[in-house]
Length: 224
Image (cartoon, rainbow, N blue to C red; front, side, top):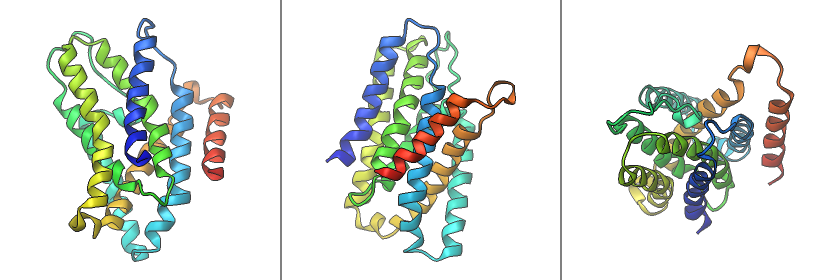
């Protein structure tokens, strides 16, 4: 049951953080993003990657992973990088951001396929979604969209990852291609996590706090 609930709770928790801190102009989430990116990348390497390579041809697996990277690049043409913390919604914007909404939902839906009872990817998705949901919620709260639109956006967004997990567990036609889809998801996770981790710090200087957050993310992922 946690496979379904934890990703949903992550969005709820992110929304609550945004509500609590919405009086502030900007919440510093860089360290949490760095930790979540490292944690997600490490769990993908420790849990998901070996699982896929055990069931698919090696070269074919690499091809599907590259397809996932390219798919995420295409999705980011519409989401503008919201999956790794970049949200560009103008305060006076009144037109609902359908492209952002659809691309985020596709990304979240595919995330659900990586979650199985015998792996710990649910925790990687959980830690990844909290800062992303927080940032998205903060920008939505600062926009001129109606509360109904904002609420619908966040509820559907919260449900997409559990829906992906449900489909991967119950649809036989989809389950037959689960390892192929997981290879694509690995590519998506690789792109997002490395983008978060390797984005340049201010002035291209070494950032000790960010480095510690990354090391903690990798270390905790290894121990669970």
